[in-house]
Amino acid sequence: MRRRLAALAAFTSIAVASNAQAATSDPVGDLIMSVITGSLPNAPGWNVKATLYHAGAKGVGALDSLGCKVVAMRTVATDKTVIPRRSVLFIKETVGLKMPDGKLHDGYWYASDVGGAIKGKRIDLYTGKGSSSMNPIKSLNLATLSAVKVGEFKGCPPG
View: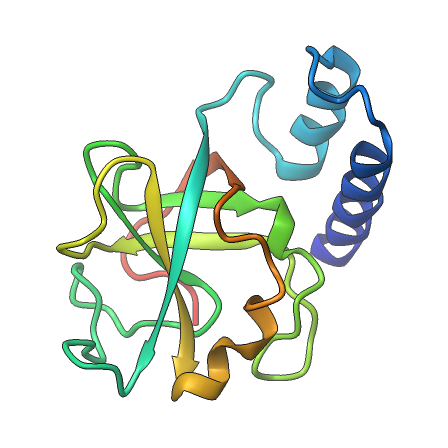
């Protein structure tokens, strides 16, 4: 099911990118995105600026702020006053990125970490071990990602 949703999300993002007049309100597009992400139309969403972090970087531990293991290409650090911890986020720009296991990303991230420099509409995406783990994401425009809250999780994020 997630594979179908990821494919549909990729198709939608291509269609939106090719529409030069996407700056105006798009109720049909919003409805399609709600079907793709599983969220209701007008669900909480943010245009965020992202940075990347990896294991091996100074100050990065093996556990997130919930005490759970950080998960490559799934854990996201947020300002918990903007995007609450335990939020499941859909970041459409990450759909189709290569995962550490070779599969393609479905766009789902888990807000389970925080960081001292993560303030306001800013997120930090955990990419894995070593700086080379950031390579698949470097092609994204990290200055303008869209994050939509599609749910909440209990316990630790899935690994």
